[in-house]
Amino acid sequence: MKQVRDREAYQKVTDAFRRRRNGATAADIVAKTALPLQTVRELIPIAADEYSARLEVTESGEILYSFPHGFVSKYRGFRAGLRKAGEKIKKGIKIAASWGFKVWIMLMLVGYFIFFMLIALAALLLSAAASSSSNERSSRRDGGIGGFYLASRIFNLIIQIWFYSELLKPVDPYYRGRGTVSPARPKSRPLHKAIFSFVFGDGDPNADWPVREKQAVIAYIQANRGVISLPELMSLTGLPPDTAEERITAYCAEFGGLPEATEDGTVVYRFDELLLRADTQNRSFPGLSGPIKRLKAFSSNEKKMNVWFSLINGVNLIFGSYFLYNALNTGAILTQADFNASSYLYGILYMLLSQVAANPLSIIIFVLGFVPLIFSLLFWLIPGLRFVLNKRDNEEIKLENFRKSGYGRIWDAPLTVKPQEIIPQVKECRPQNLAAAQDRLIKEFGAYANPDVSLDETGKPVYSFGELDREKAALEKYRAGIAPGASALGKIVFDSGRE
Image (cartoon, rainbow, N blue to C red):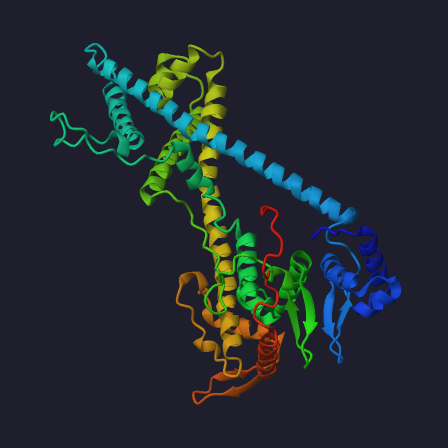
């Protein structure tokens, strides 16, 4: 909300509107408050934004402000304060939970993987020692040798997964022994950031969108003599008519704009204060266009790296499931016979834990069974859900970008609009169901200006927005009536640094 310099005058304006919710003009507010007309005209856009006013044009060309949704502030009051507090609490909890979960994931993925690797190594060494003993070779032929083979295969797989890295590639033989420094390898991404990117992604690429969009709208206004119409704002932002009307009202309050009516009653929005600038460079986009939103990427990691994270997590899942299954089915290892009958790796783990814990079975069931099993499932579930949500969000982004190009196409040639010919070339602007998006586009714009419909030679509909064409002509005439540089800074008449 724009800061108000005269709070007392603003309170009088809002009180006057509150008593006339069905509609009031600037003259009505002046009559009720006895405030200067210029003061009322400056304060009305701020009140219209705060209380979500509806703007209507009378036959005389005056703007009628009404409040069909009730006179409730968007920025003040108990409900607004409660909403803001809830948003802050929600944001804080989200940040804390996100970071806590990230740390937990890092410790779990790497910690359990290293632990399971050490268990496999211990099993490999013990199995090798047992197999080399001539006294026990025959009795352990089925268990020991089989266990040795299994442990060696698992350990070999773990070594391949864990130590696969660009940093561990051998030095180029050309440089070895030549006293020449090999070219520096590109700095690799930290492991924890790569893991977070796989699980949580890399944030919203459109986090700065509100600022970028405002900059585009302001640049367009400044390049068009300080004037913008609602259809032009719709084309720049991709907003449907009702939302665009709320947005332009907010811009009026924020940037000192005022709605005005042309001779034929067309509403335009004039921002003379935005023309008072020293930098006169045109920073608007070519034609009636604006920036488009970027699509959300699943991860900035290379696909190969994400595959390795999945494999590492798969190892944790296999080990957790394996130990949980054997703990629930085999139980405690009390005698030599129990050890021989049990699974080999499970028996090795139980023996090792029994040296340091009074109840190794509970540790295996919960710490090495349930926890890594649940973690591994979540490690796959979260990216899977994010993939689905990203796909949905990207479709919404494509639809919004498509509306921008579609609205701009209608505004450029309102008398001959063929929906089937509105086909964007870039993927960020092409929805999956293009035909449905084209039909929806016409309906949304038709809510602002009713079109006439005819059929072309192929039997496909052609829409003619005659009312919009007249509005466009009125806007061009209104702009032409504003002298170039009418709101320019002018010559410097005083310089504090000049002696």
